[in-house]
Amino acid sequence: MRILHTSDWHLGRSFHGASLMHEQEEAIERIVELASDQKVDLVVIAGDLYDRAIPPTDAVRLFDEALVRLHGTGAQIVAIVGNHDSPSRVAVADRVLERAGVVVRGDVSRCIQPLQFDPEDGGPPVSVFPVPYLEPSLARPVLDLLDGDSEAADSEQPRDASRQEPVIAQSAGHETQEIEKSQPAGHRRISHHDVTELATTLIRGAAAAGGPTRTVVVAHTFVDGATPTDSERDLSIGNIDRVGLDVFGGFDYVALGHLHRSQAFDGGRIAYSGSPLPYSFSEENDTKSVRIIEMNAEGRCSTDVVPLDVGLPLRTLQGRLENLLDSPEFDAAETARVRVRLTDPELPLQAMAQIQRRFPHAAVLEHVPDGRKAPGGGDVAEAVENSEHPLELALQFWADQHGREASAAQRDVLTSALQAATGEHDA
Image 1: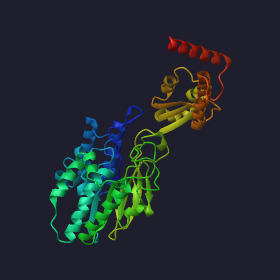
Image 2: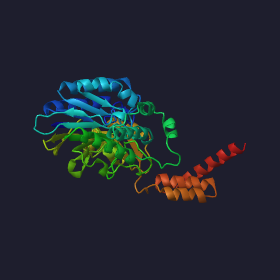
Image 3: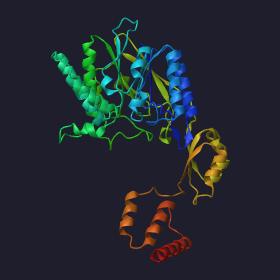
Image 4: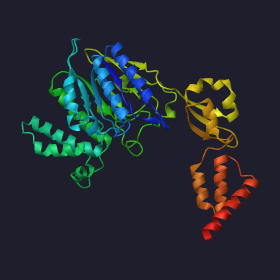
């Protein structure tokens, strides 16, 4: 069985104010081409289909076109909602689409309902379990009820639908406050690890109940040990809610989304495909790709990481303005999205306008004068606390920004400005 793993399309996203829609169209064109050329059986899209909960019309139209074209290659499709997506909007037609071989899963209560394949390779069936992004306080009550139902099934007790359906409805509607009221007082905070561990435990039970099978799990989370970029939205404060790799033990392949850098764990069994385009300058040196997984009859997987080679590259340029504008060494950056770090002692007038005449896709301008010290947050905070006069604070700020002390003339200007401001305030 052949699987194409992609994620984090973020349709509708912009890059420092510039639309990425055309490049996202190119990325999808390339993914469709690969699905067809590689004779892929299944396309997996591991969350963050859109960049925001209410996406622009063009983004919705592009996603619809992507599903139609991918399905036209003969592949079935499994997509899940990520932390940027609205489950109720994105997955509104999931149950109908599933009949056509297209799963767009947003309902947590359906995470134990797999898409089943029977490859003609002599091996057991393949069960693909789509797990939408698990917001802990919303997902835990639903998973607890699923867990209770599985226990009732094991003991041949009837399922109590009256308990389950209201909580699932609350989860789909994001009624967080109501769900949290149902939790026992004084319980410890539910983590992403907790809910993911519970979900995967339930999935193992569901897979075992169906007899011999090969298992693929699709999830959207931050696993411990993975490397983030600057373009992901934090799922929690610090790294306390990272999910341990051990919760995915026993599955043949785990297709992850959320992190935008391609990376793999446990010999490639657990992997992030990464985003199809770079969404921050921290991804400047990343190769954007998809993963083509070949699963044999025993469930062992081999992976081919295929570069997409679409969209504008990212480049960071550093130097004085005159050199950046004239030197041929920067010719290749003229067609790239550019971050410029100017080292001129003084920031030139209309610097960005001059830069964009040569580098039309310049997105970021930073002024880092030659010899400037990196901003020292602790030192500045200490100076603010210890300063006895506004002029001292202004001069400290000047030195921090320019990497040198103010000249006598500049000091006089600052003094005059402060006197004028103080006089106006007193008046």
